[in-house]
Length: 253
Image (cartoon, rainbow, N blue to C red; front, top):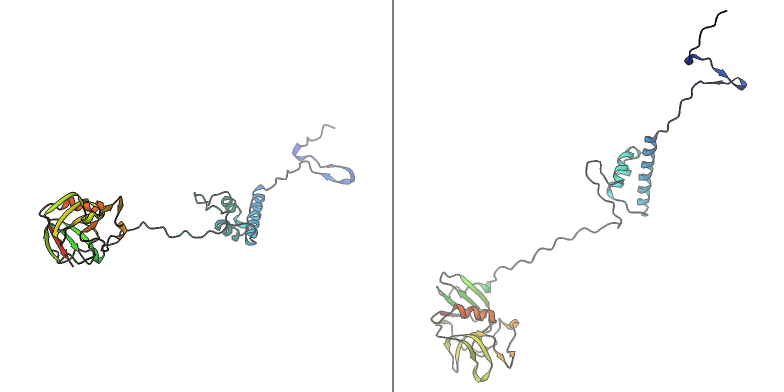
């Protein structure tokens, strides 16, 4: 007899081994499903973090807590949030390690200059034009220009006695340096506008006697002098520059 039909390699008869078992000619390789493993591990991690956070073992941020509440189906999104990304193309909110934080206090606003008080307002009966205005009750001076605009205003210390009557006066003399009556000290930027019983009455800085001022600047705004009007030195110089001989001085009560 001639040779029988050739058997194709793909149609080979099964080979029998011991005990009559048939071995398959080919064995399919088993591939592990890594995607499901990663999802399961991610979901387990998020669930563990949520549980530990609920027990107070570790602090949990808002993003992780919400992801855990979504269930195991959000494994991929959970992995992204744990790695620092929200899945929307921007970094997720960081998880705090310091526990809950107090809300930020209201920002401190810069201090604002108070509006002019009623005592700062120029007295209504103080005349017009360029002038120096001294109000006895307010113990305040105003330097007013020719357009009736206040150039400067500040507190002063007038006399402890009623030696000056309200009315209109005129500067008649100025001295860069002067000496008080009875050797009561020296002063600068003297601007005289009235005559007292014993000496001239004018504006000047706080007198100094034996190297010590006769009052503090904090005391300005209260009567302190024996007849003149005391000023802080910067204000005294400003009035000296503003009010030359012939300048009107208006005294109000």
